[in-house]
Image (cartoon, rainbow, N blue to C red; front, side):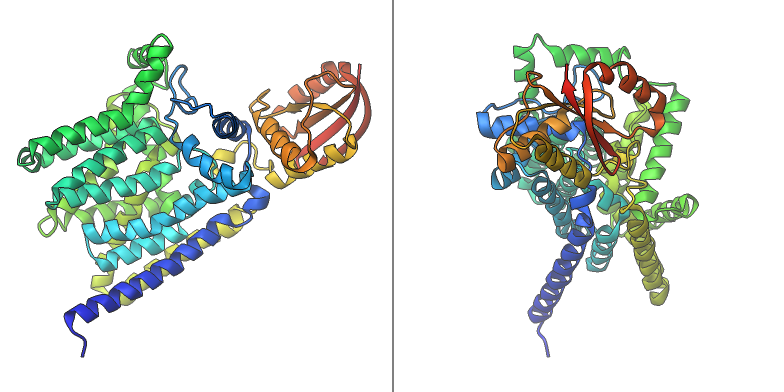
Length: 500
């Protein structure tokens, strides 16, 4: 017979084994065809050029990439994390992407710990299974950019927060650190997590009042330092650019504002879209039903587990409330902060079904896994329903690599320069980075700056702008030189010109 301790140890070993297995599956699902289908566009090139500057030239930065609003920037967390795989691989984009996919897959362990802390072991294991196969989670993890970091950080934030609310006082400090990290990963998180903390403080005010004043002060200072100090230092050196831009944003002279009706509609549509992409792709109506019954199942647990119910409801609805109050029209990926909450909510519903009829709960889990795997199998190879690549699904890293290799073969050691047609138009950062990486690590030299007789023009297929592209080729490219050769790889065509 097992003692209670031995039983506990047995379950821990079993859970570790299952979670490790799920982690490996999750990692493999997320790297599927990534060597061919990695999306490496202008923004990826821009970011990694900065990372290269940090590593090679030791040029430290206070801010990250620009947001969609003029004069406002993300934090530099993504840049500094990217320096790790950059150093290991000498800047290989694939290795850098694998590093961030690995971080995403590690969320499987954190999600288990969080859900177990909120509810119980069974719901925790269901959550880990759903997250492993979640199509929305898989797609998000394959985006070589800063927003996916939000998923991992949000999981840590709520893990520490629930521990604090259950009486472990010093966990308030890592809550503050995670708030800062979330803000540094994606600036909109500052707004979302501020609303979350506001509601948490209002509802659990007795917990905060009883807290040691020193811990409250330390946590508040840590939050401000980790979330804001780098932006303030940047502003002091740049005539308060960010503060002035925020004033324009708050006075509605910039940003994506609309009427109250538009804001509600846009927020609700993206909210539901993000939910069904994460839980049950293809089916918006069943997703709405799952969400509604999930919330109902959560509320029914109120008398048994008030902390978990309050936290889940705050987590799920805070982003929508924030965007609607500010009349802001959020982008799809702004809801990355609630992806984990969607998974847990669905798991709570499955647990309730399981308690009614075990086989029905198991069938429900298997159904969701099947639907997500089906979406993974038919969408990822073709880059369909991949939100960050929706305008250019045919742009593939394998074709970009083939283009660069053939250009170097054509050049045969001679100097050359290049021009490229990109989407969005005239942002060559992606190609500049790839030429730097392959030129430095493979071929021993990089393209010149227009002082050579050989010009390679890289033309990306643009189905939505065929006439514009044809006019550019006829009226602009033809004046650069005489065409000597032409070759294609996938959606990319290259013309070799003898420059005039």
